[in-house]
Image (cartoon, rainbow, N blue to C red; front, side):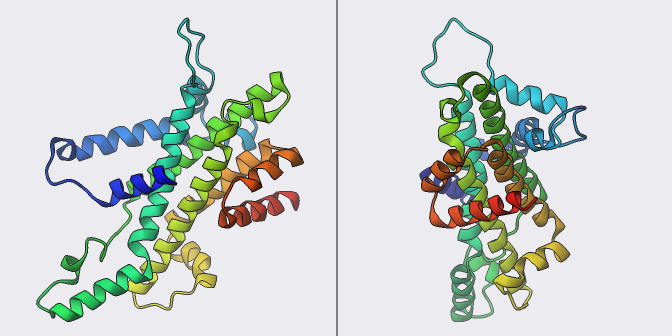
Amino acid sequence: DSCMDQMAHTLLHKGDGSTLNTAGLEQDILRSLVLESLGGIGDKVNGADDSLLAKALLRHVESVNFWVKPATSKFFRKEPAVIPLVRGLCAYAGGMGEALVTCTSPNVTRKSQMTWQQQGPSVSLKDCTPYATWSLPPGAICCAEYAIRGAARCVVLDLASSGKFMGDWRNSSLSIMVPSVLHSAFRLSCGIQSYALYLQRIQSLTAREEDNLNWIAVHRPELRRLLLSCDDAAIMILESLKSVDALRVIETRVQSGCRDWVQQLQSQLNNR
């Protein structure tokens, strides 16, 4: 949670002309390329299991395996390199969800409107708060999608390879990251739904949570794609954890809201 909060703060607050921020475009391009190499999609690999690879191209599988199954080295590592990678992917995806919840909550937009009314129409509403007209660029949507899918692929491929030799999913290097990936996917999903409600409010529409998903499906297909990616990431992991014991352990290690979401997805899997 602290990593996601820090990432949300980083995404919402930019610097004031430092060298790091003047190269923002180059950084965005590099970030998107790295994330796409892990979480991109394409045509199904011939003979591949859809639930495992989720439309991954061969180069995506090779990129994930580079981290999950590193070549043997004479240097001993206390922690596999894939663990900090998955931590970073979770922090980015979950942090974007936290940022969306922060800047699109009703309290923030209402406070912005009150500030504008108090200072008079000579002051632009946009100048009252950096969140008043906050928007989610298409590139950010793609990067979030790549990040959460890449994290899930790392976990699933690691569980699959470790389970064949060790017999217990908890012996996998990334077993400790399973709740983190699920929680990050859940927070990203919450952020997208909060952002959709925000879009309806600034358009003077009646924003109701029970109608939110339908509005997203009709008016914002790019947001719906990201929501489906969050669900798919969790389903990939749940499908790879077939044992009742694994699901019980996971449910005890995630927060209540995420637990309800995971149980809902599990019910969908059971009804297939």
